[in-house]
Length: 391
Image 1: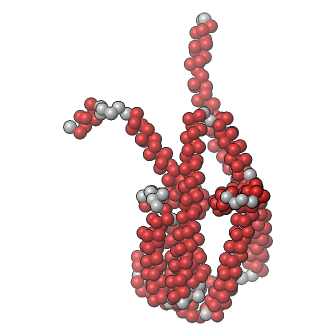
Image 2 (image 1 turned 180 degrees about the vertical axis):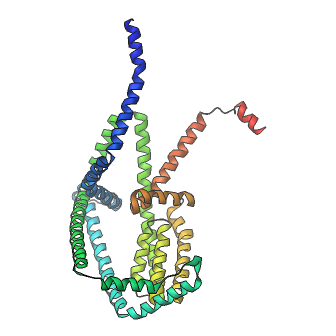
Image 3 (image 1 turned 135 degrees about the horizontal axis):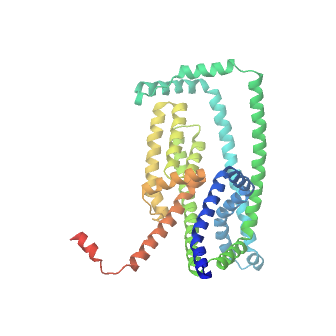
């Protein structure tokens, strides 16, 4: 048996050997999937403050860049030389003033709303009974709310309350306190890291660009840079337009609810403006909550009026305000938007729902460019088989 023959036989066995290694590796990974998941979870717990720091820096970078361009036009050399630092400082001051203003508006409104709710509890309870009775009388799909059963269950819980029941909430309170402290610490890390990211944005981007250029071939590199730029522009445009749209929608809703003499008009209007960042589902959820609050606090008639008014505002926003703001930037079909939001929410919660539209818009551009590329590569004359199909 000659040496070349043995070498050929060994080479022929290499694919089978690699397949066996792949099967063994896959089995080991699957058998230790829990350990890998725990490791990933621990790593994610460490890096999550910096991830949120990146998100904060990314959002704040939009006004920082705008202010930086204005400062570059000034004739003061001291400011021009340090325009990035001054723009970051101005944005942080403006953000702090905005948060202070919102808290000064929100906290008194919340305190007033809670006091009003407590003082008018009997009236709200009677309104709630009326709403429940109305729903039961409608008999929609056999839906029946057993209010007596609910109250009996609450009464049993109160009667069975003991020291053990008391210790459980205390332990839960200790756990919640620890979680709150950990959350505050992670929030502090996120804010500090976001400031450093804002200050070193150009250096960080240049470094990642250098790494990418070193390890990725020229053609994929330019494609990555192109679509990363498109994604960046989409995110900026989406945050900008949804913020302006949320301010308009929240203001209109607040004014409308004030005309209906709702004591929670400011809180509900602010809530509607915030949930507007989530397309479709956000406005539906916000409107449903607002209508329920008005119905339970002011009666079914006022709740029905609030529903009609908020639906009109939503239609004006969807058909007039949003198209003017976006200008066709995200030309996605409603079905694709709903699918994107659903998948984004399943993968990353509310953050995934907010990020779904800009990401899917870029993916759609990539798909269309790929299809156009292969269409250009096809011969202009159709194949005989294609011609036979249409004959």
